[in-house]
Amino acid sequence: MSWMQDLQQLANDVTDSFATQIIHTPMMARPNERSRPDPSRPAYSLCGVYDETGVEWEKGKIEPKIISTDPFVVAPPDRFRFPPSIDDGIELPELGRRFTVRAVEFNGPHLKKLCLHEVGRPPMS
Image (cartoon, rainbow, N blue to C red; front, side, top):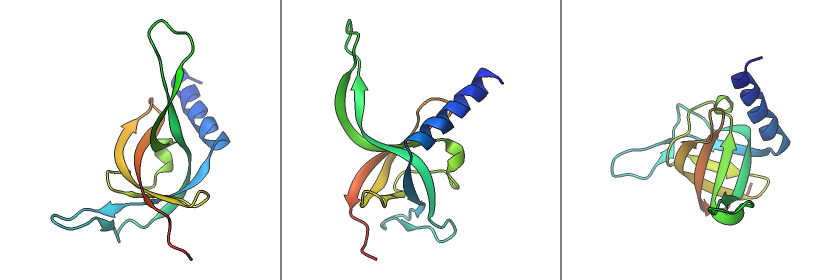
């Protein structure tokens, strides 16, 4: 097994260990209109890691400083049925929270990080 395969396996193991259910709703952007769910790409569920904290390294210090950050979700790219993009919807049913994607970043070679903006609570069923 190569070291790249080891990293892929590590990313999957970490995601599985700390996973929460995420519902990804791909959105369709139209000029001069609000984004709305894309009918050609239905919402789906996947597992990823949700967090609201980060670390900051100070020069000369050994221990990192824990800082508060915007909420984010991290998951291996192959878990997304459709590539996530800005303004897509993210719902965390276990926490009862809804977000939109503010930015999509790679967090290493085997993890995709979605920076989120909270928009409210999911509708009552």
